[in-house]
Length: 430
Image (tube, rainbow, N blue to C red; front, side, top):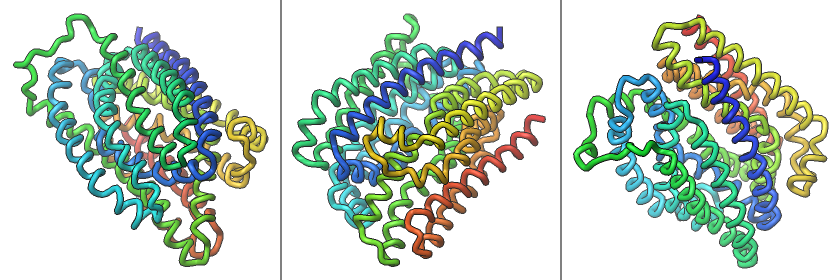
């Protein structure tokens, strides 16, 4: 029975992720061709800020809720009502912070005044992302992957329709309108995703006014699980946020023009990296299915099943990652032409592709550490990796090698994080 649930969950997630990724690819083609190079550069510039804000707002709650629900020691309703106050407070704080600091971030840190309104637009979608995160964590903990899969597919279809109808009109007014509009329109698709989740909730799942009072012990348990997780993600996202800031500063000092820096950074983030992380939908599916499965087995002290699932996950990840990254490495120009109608970014793909086979192992390894209650160790490896990456970017960029300081930093980060995670997993599981 355990085997069938795990593989069924993984299969559903992989199929759903494949369909979602296919729709996402179409969205990316429409998006990149609609907003042009200036829009791509602007969107790539604010993406680190976007990722940082989302990580803070989610607070690692999906994984924490999933783990607690999977253990079955507490009622699911109690878990959800105990995290709602945290979500409400966080959203109020983050929306206020974004509105007050957007201009400063755009002008003083990103060196691009046009980024002000796209950053402000991020505040609109935060509440929707928070609610969907809670619901997603609940269904993951129940090992019910169909709601997540269906919601993702419907969300992507809605996003595609909205983009086709409205983005060309916004793009005619300029890249600021196009990027801001794209972010604001995402709120609609997130809302649709929430509706789908609510439809799949059990018919008897109702929360009365008396149940809205949070249980402090449960809240503490959730925070104990999610804070180490969010700490690792936060460190990674802070480093990601600082990437364009550090690159812009150092490369300007060494004589590179702003147009070159933002242009190349846009190529790196919008063209090269998306092709290198093609296997991520399978890796994400495996990692998501691992958390409740490993958590249950570890709770029962069934290390045999933990080791078995770990080996299976890593084997599948390596095989899929090797095949896809080898194809991208051999035919980068073909993929870039088909997807983005460009040849820019080949140089970065050629250097990074072999290392992204190793990068794919991060997901399953981190999921195992989270499931066995060792999120602090996952945080430790992430912290060390991003510190090395940030220092590498800051120092190597002085050598007049363009964006290759960032490329080398990315490689070092991958190698360090995966190596440390393997050591930690081996110590905890075997």
